[in-house]
Image: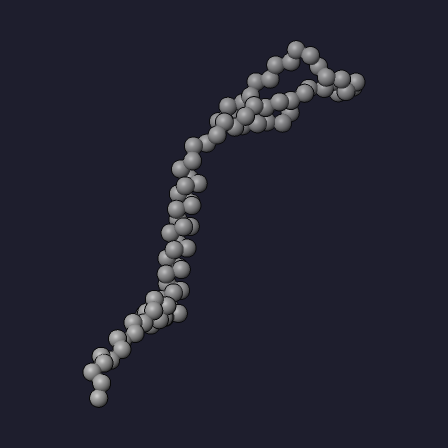
Length: 87
């Protein structure tokens, strides 16, 4: 008889541990929570952005008969509370 010690028990690998604890429903729940957090974070990031400069209005006023541009014209932009009227 030999006095050799029995071989040490093999420890299961990481993948076997994960496979034993994760079910499909748990994986789906994890992915759902991650997707929700990213979606809400993206929306909050979009909303919290400061509005950039909206720019300037550039227009060329032309004479109705000749179609030539009219020089020295001023344009008053209506306030946002004023309603545009045709006529």
